[in-house]
Length: 72
Image (cartoon, rainbow, N blue to C red; front, side, top):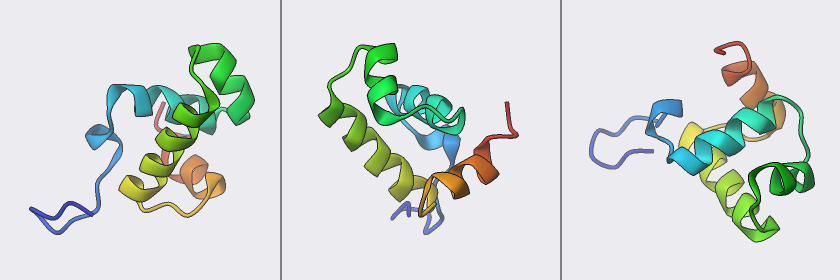
């Protein structure tokens, strides 16, 4: 939730790094595979996933795929 506008954030509000993780999440890649693809430690990928879920208002990967998987 954006405290300034009192609205849920969307994909365009995510950090560049988070967008890269989101794209791979909705393609069905595991967090371990995302680590290898983006050359990031698992902790960083987990932090990105937490931010993605919080900022988009999605509770799980299925909601992410339904919301962002078709917007490619």
